[in-house]
Amino acid sequence: MGFDGRSVVVTGGTGHLGATVVRRFLEAGAHVAVPVRDAGKGSELRDGLSGLAGTGTDARLFVAEAQAADLAAMERFVEAVMTRWGRVDALANLAGHFASGPAWDLDLLRQLWEDNFMSVATATATCLRPMRARGYGRIVSVSAYGSLRGGKETAAYAASKNAIVRWTESMAAALKDEGITVNAVLPSTIDHPDNRAAMPKVDPAKWVSPDELASLILFLVSEEASGVTGSAIPVLGRT
Ligand SMILES: NC(=O)c1ccc[n+]([C@@H]2O[C@H](COP(=O)([O-])OP(=O)(O)OC[C@H]3O[C@@H](n4cnc5c(N)ncnc54)[C@H](OP(=O)(O)O)[C@@H]3O)[C@@H](O)[C@H]2O)c1
Image (cartoon, rainbow, N blue to C red; front, side, top):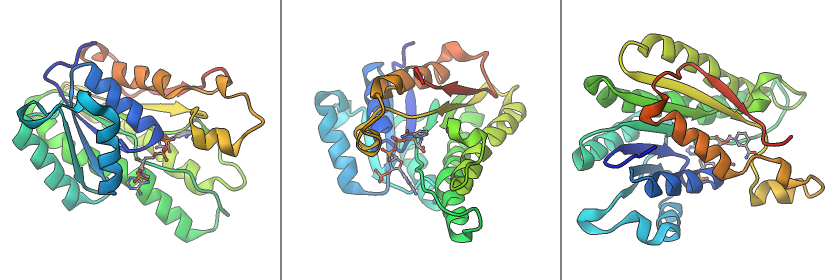
């Protein structure tokens, strides 16, 4: 799976999974564009990648402020990517977060709908224009295994993440003859420091590692995965 000369947009690139996915794309030869909501975190991401990001005319990492759910900001962001690299081959929708609360908490329902679902739909709508113009595109979004069934306090999270799966199926059906694939991955627990701190009694070796999940994400947006679309793939590690 080579990504030489390919241009990839990664939302949520400043997160635990995101930093690994960005690094893996750069190692595979891609040019990577990351919209961030916090410029400081964008700088930390760049610093953590050291030489991989390139410099000057060789820069292979573009980081700029844009909230994934903000249509105008994402339109400007994608325009800047097109100016730099002239193409958007793939989009990895990683931005999102967990929050719990009563199923009747309307503010929470609205917030997670915006943060988890509209961020995916908006980033995709903006990347889709150059993809459709070229007749090529790969889109993958991170849903959650926990979205397959609502729990007592997880209505807002499960609904917002489950919507990604239904939307993925519809997008795939609508775009299947345009050279554009749309898939989702459904991790259970990702092994990272926050989860280790929150669940100290669980053996983290059972969880899926960011690198394991990144391998699947890179495959799904590779040229080789042309026959895979509309899929929602559970990624359970060893749980
Ligand atoms: N961790 C798990 O066990 C687990 C399980 C299933 C699914 N997931 C999903 O996997 C993805 C990555 O998770 P992670 O563990 O890497 O989480 P993380 O470390 O908290 O990173 C989340 C990323 O999304 C960004 N983000 C969060 N809310 C946002 C918003 N409202 N607008 C724009 N960006 C926003 C964060 O930006 P900032 O850096 O600015 O905060 C960060 O880049 C998420 O979609 C998460 O829901 C995680």
